[in-house]
Length: 352
Ligand SMILES: Cc1ncc(COP(=O)(O)O)c(C=O)c1O
Image 1 (spheres, rainbow, N blue to C red):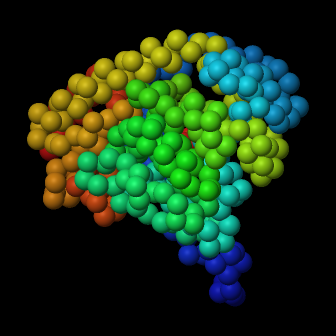
Image 2 (cartoon, rainbow, N blue to C red):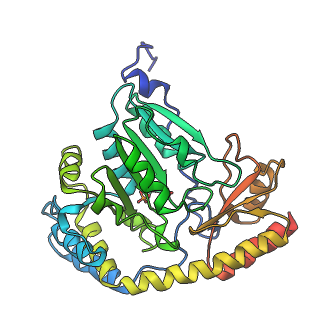
C-alpha cells in the first residue's frame, strides 16, 4: 500500500530522537561476548530453583505491585527500612521513572559525559535539556561543575560507564548538599567497586541510589532493579511506574538472589581478580587502561580509531563495545569475562 501521509503521529521530541541503540545481542552463542557487561558466571542455583517454583506457581495472577517480599529481604540485606526501597523492571525502568517524575519540558538535567548514553535518550523523551559536563582525561568527577545551576536532576553514574572509574562518596555528598533538585547515583556496577553512596539516602532527602540485579547477580535476563531513597520521594516515583512492573519470575529470582548473597560476592571477587589480569594484558599490548572498579575496562590507544579493531575482533569471534562518539573513538570497552575468555580476547587482540 502507498503511504498517503507525511504527517507525524508522535510528539516532535520523539520524531527527532535517534533512539537508544543497545549493544549487539547475537543469536549465535559461539561468540566470546564481552560487549554488554554481562556477568560471565551463572546466577545462584537457588535463583533457578525459585524461578522454577514461580513458573509452576500461579502465573494466572498478577504479581505483587509493591514487591513486598523482595523489599523486605532487600531491607534486611542493605540495613534500611522497606519503605526506603522501590523495585523496578531493571534499573533502566527506574531511570525512566525518575526522568518521567522529575524532568519536564525544558528542565535541565546535569551529568558528566561520556557516561551511560541512555540518559540522553530519556532526557530527550521528556523534552528536557541535557547539560553535559565533560569528564577530564582521567575521568575524575568534575564535582565543582555539577553543582547548582537550576537543574531539576543531577545524575552520577558510579562507577561510571564506560570508564569504570569510581568517584568518592564525599564528592557526591557535596553535590547533594549544594543542589536543590534530585541527585541520582546509578550504582549498576557498585558490587565490583570499593565504595557505595547507599548510606547517603538516610541523610539526604534528595539522593536516590539505583542498583540492579543484572550485573553482579548475573540476572540481566530477568530485568530487576532497586531504587533506594527516602519514603516521601519513593511515594512520588511510585505514581509513575507501571502497576505490575516486576513479573512474578523477576520477584522470585531477586528474592532468592538476595538469600544467596555470598554467591554474588564470590562471583564479584572472581570478576575483580580477572579484571586485573585483563588490565595487565591490555597494557602489555600497548593500551592505556583506566583504573576500573566495574566489570569492564576502557582500553585506549590515543589518537587511533578502534572501529577497525572492533570489527577484526568480531571476525575472530570476540565482541567488544566501540562507541562512535567524540572522545571515545580511540577506545574499546571490554567486559571482564571468564579467565578463558580473556585469554581468547588477548590472543585475538595480539593478532589484530
Ligand atoms: C550504568 C548503567 N546503568 C543501568 C544499566 C541498566 O541495567 P538494567 O539491566 O538493570 O536495566 C546499565 C546497563 O548496562 C548501565 O550500564
